Amino acid sequence: MTVNERLVEVLHDKKISALKFSEVAKLKARNLHNVTSGKTEFPRIDIIQAVARLFPDVNLRWLLIGEGEMYLSGGQLSTVKEISSHEKTKMLNALGKKELELMDKNEQLEYLAELLLKVGKLFMELPPFKEEGGEKLREIKRELDEGLAKVEGIT
Image (cartoon, rainbow, N blue to C red):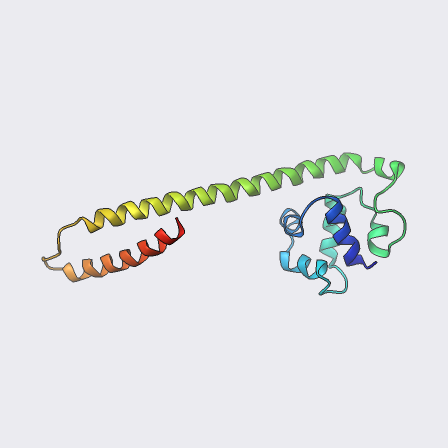
């Protein structure tokens, strides 16, 4: 088994996707994908450091050279237990915040789309443009119509 395959096994065992892991660890998703898909022969040091930081119970000797067990034993683990609980809490908080941020942004986009639709409908109710500057207003109306068509497609 290669280092890459062992890394995939760790992520699977920890029940975290490579994408979520890269977000929490602040890694480039593409770099991690290249490792998990086998495109690169060996993970970059920042990926190994992230595993050590976020999963201190993982035996790095096993991860890197395949010797020993995937997880540290009781005595070895007791030295990192405090760090482990702190890092896991940080990771869970980061995941929760990220999902909340995405949810908030989706709600904001929906609200913005609704506002644009209202503005567009109000603009359409305006009387025809006859006064000076009317051509510019007609151009704006055409642009708004095009934008509204796109917004209606995503709501």
